[in-house]
Structures are given as C-alpha cells and as structure tokens.
Length: 167
Image 1 (tube, rainbow, N blue to C red):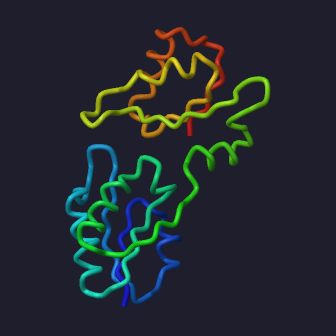
Image 2 (tube, one colour; image 1 turned 90 degrees about the vertical axis):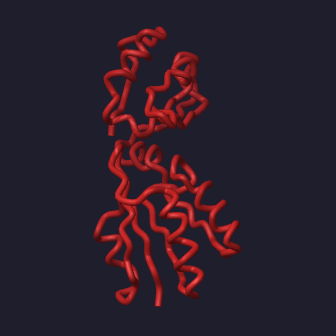
Image 3 (cartoon, rainbow, N blue to C red; image 1 turned 45 degrees about the horizontal axis):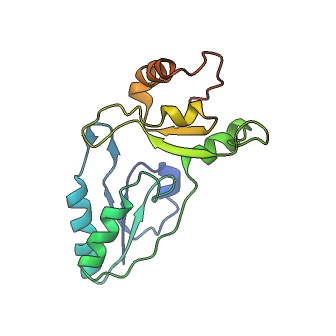
C-alpha cells in the first residue's frame, strides 16, 4: 500500500497514481495553507515509519521555492530514506509554452529565479538591480503583488518599454 501527499497538482495527474494509494491533500496557496509545513514534515515521517512508500507530489520543481529543504531535514532527522525526482520549474514551462526564450544571445545571458515575498510576506525589491543589469528575472509567487513589483522595478529605473511576461 502507498500513501500519496498532494499539494496543488492537477487532478488528472493525481489520478495517474496507484488506485489503492491513500491520498492526503496538503495543498497551499498564499495565506491559505490547508496543512502547516511542520505537519507535512510529520506526516511524511509517520507514513514512512509505517512501512509505506510515500510520495510527496508537487507541481513544478520541488527544489525551487518548494520547501524541499525543510522536508529533507525532517526525513533525515527521522532516518527515512528518500529520493527527489525533479520537475519542470514554472519559469521554464511558461517560457516554452509562450515560445519566449529566457536568455537570448546579445540581450541577456543570465537568469535569476526570485520570489516576491520574504518570510513575513513583505514584497522584496532586492532583485530589481539584476533586471536593470540585463538579467532575465523569473519572479515567483507574485500574482497578488504584481502591481507593487512593477512599481518597484520602475522606481529602480527599469524602462516602461521593457518586455514582461505574466503567467
């Protein structure tokens, strides 16, 4: 028997799992966590401790803003063996879908992954200078603060004609 923990993963993907798997939804959205990260860590260790094969299924790549470090630490502390299977991070998927390269010879030769929020949900401007220096900046978790991010980039000197993709 398997136990499967899902965050925000499309139902069609979850349905591909074993039919006899016990599914525990631990989905998160901004300011709406159905299960705390500490509890997710406990569930991972508890279910594995029962001798079950546990899958922590996440959308995107768990190593990019995915709290994987905390889950790895919890599994190590509980002496639970684990394997990480990388996914496709949102920036790569969005760029491929829109057919817009994230780097382009002669224009941009560096790519930065940035989050809009610190641990206290404050909008972060630290990476604005990177955009000014010609880096492509892939901003994650910015839906609710996109206007503030745009304002901060303008304040930092980014030209209004700079191409932007919002997905």
